[in-house]
Amino acid sequence: MFGIDGTVLAFVVLAGFSAGAVAYAFLFTRITNEKQAGKRLETIKTAETDRSVVKASRDRVAEAAKRRKSVQDSLKELDEKQKSKDSAVKKPPLKAQLRQAGLKVSIERFYIYSAICGLALTIIAFVVGAPLFVLPGVLLAGALGLPRWFVSFRRARRVKAFLNEFPNALDIIVRAVKSGLPLNDAVRLIANESPEPVKAEFRRIVDSQQMGLSIPDATLRMPETMPCTEASFFGIVIQIQSQAGGNLSEALGNLSRVLRDRKKMKAKVQALSMEAKASAAIIGALPFIVAFLVYLSSPNYLMPLFTTSIGNLILGVSAVWMSIGIFVMRKMMNFEV
Image (cartoon, rainbow, N blue to C red; front, side, top):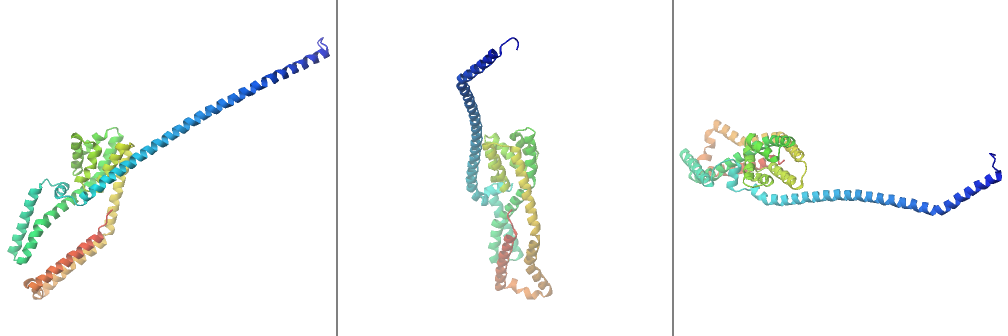
C-alpha cells in the first residue's frame, strides 16, 4: 500500500502509540498538578469573593446595628428629658401658663388684675345683698378662681387652634423638603405664612436658631410654650433625624398622618360621648329648673333657704355636693386620646 510494507507501517503506528503512552506517563503528574493548582486558584478566588461578600454583609449589619443603637440612645435620652419635663408640663408655673395662653402679661400685672377682679366681684355681691359670710368666698373666687380659669380657657383654646393647623404646617414642610429646600427655610416659611398660633411657635424656633440654638434643640423646647403631645412628637422626630439620619420628608409625612388620625379619633370619641354629656347637662340643670318652677308656683316655700342661716347652710352644702357631682361626671366623660 503506497509502496510501504505493512510490517513497517504497523511498526511505525505501534511506535507512535508507544511514544504517546510514554509521553502521557511522564506528563500525567504535571497535568494533574496543573489541574489541582487551577482548582485551588478557583477555590481561593471564590473564597475571596465570598469573604468580600461576607465582609460587606457584616458591614451593612454593623452599620444597621450602629444606627439602631444610635436611635435607641436618642430615644432613651429624649425619654429621660421628657420625664423630667412631664411634671413641669402637667403643672407648669404661672409664668409658663401665661405664655402658653398667649397672654403678654407679667406675673405682677396678673396679680393686680386678679385682685381687682376679686374686689369687683365682692363689691357686686355686697351691693346685691349677699350674706357677709359669703363675701370671703366671693373674694377668693374672684381673685384666685376666675382669673386662673380664664388663663386655662385661653390656654386650651390656643392648643386647640394649634392642633387644627399643625398637620397642614407639617405637610408644607414635607413638600418644601421634597422640592429641595433645607429644613431651616421650610421652618422659616411656616413662621412667615402660617396662621396663629402655629406662626408664633415656629417664629420662636427661628428666633432660637438665630440666637445660636440648633433646630432639633429649638423644636424640643416647643412643648414649653405649646403643652400638647403633638409638639413633643415633632421635636422627637427632628431630634432623631438629626442624630441618626434618614428620610426627613417621609418621617414628617408619617407624623402628619398620625396627627390627623389622632384628630379623627378625638372627634369620634367626642361624638360618642355627646349622649353622656347631654345626660350630665340635664342632670346638673334639673335641681335649678325644679327650684325655679317651685319658686314660680309658691315663692314662700323656698324663701327660708335664702332668709335663714340654716337655709343658707343647706344651700352651701347643696352647692358643694352639686359641684362634686358635676366634677365626677366631667371626669367620667373626658377621654384622653
